[in-house]
Amino acid sequence: MIESHESPKCPVCQARFRESSTCSRCGADLVPLIRLIAGAYRLRLEARQALQTGDYEQARKLASEAQVLCSTPKGKDLRLLSSWLLLNKSLELQHLLGDEAMPA
Image 1: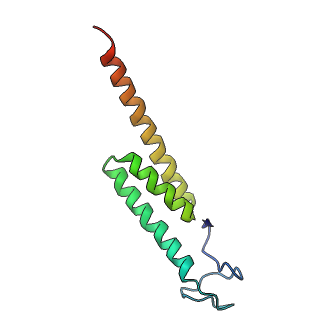
Image 2: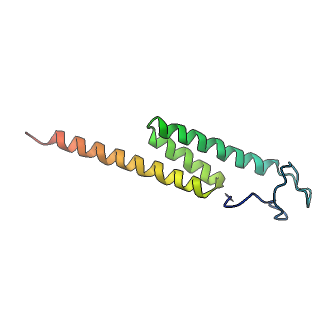
Image 3: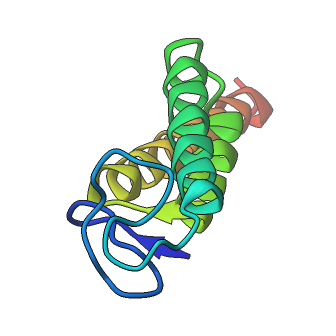
């Protein structure tokens, strides 16, 4: 898992990214790392879209997958929000079903 609380760093020498696919200090190939970060970004975009359509379960799944690839504070917030909305939706449904099950 990549922790991205600040700008990404080279996994070999810890130099900051310089918007290049190779590390400016040690020459390490950064493409795999860049792909992980980009993949997490795309998953978070999809999670936000799922939230907008009310698909909280899918949003939580996507946000969780993104956090596994590249953990960020905003990604954590997105995962928590989608989990909370899913829980509230479930509790609301239970409440509605409970009310319908009670005799009048």
